[in-house]
Image (tube, rainbow, N blue to C red):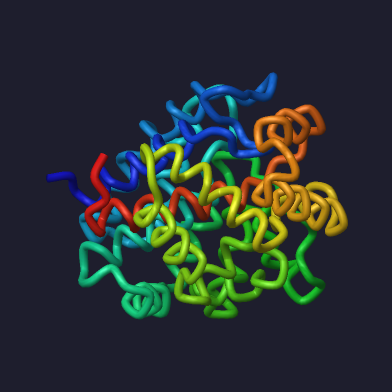
Length: 277
């Protein structure tokens, strides 16, 4: 039987093998400087941090170690957001029932030290983020460890830090909404037909069609994110070809990375709930 940490690593691997996932790296599509092999290597590198989460080591330390290991490849940031979802979900699974309610308890139990680990993780990899609100300028995550004294002065836990980003970041929103979209995606994958990567690809398209991707909004703008969502809706209706949309978005450099992170989390939940592979 696989451990939760092993299922988290498997979820990362299954996510990147799913195709088509319009705009994202998959087994058929790559960017010139971000390739399929980088994601496979990142999943392997993250394993120690995931095991730490499964051994009830502090969430912040576990996340930092997972990111550090993930970044040990030439592609840069492959799965930062996915790991930010998977680490607390692994902890949820090993400390009780994997439910939205228990996941919320895990989030609420995070500490200032966990927030410090989260900030240190930004020193291992370049993460595409926007400018923070004025009141959070001193806590800009791009400052890395330099922001930790301010974290400690304000007594911000990791939950507090992510709660400040819910309007702009879909992964942060999961933390404060009981991982609602992740659990929903898990249900769609579990009830789907065909092999698991194909189910994951379908779940990706459905998730992209249901809500604009916040990573696209940050890297481009909200109008582009809405256009991508509308294109995904057309593909679901059969009015557009998902493979053609995938090629179009890759060519345009439009990467719905948050949606991919959610699919990885959904795959983990489904695997923990008994999804056979």
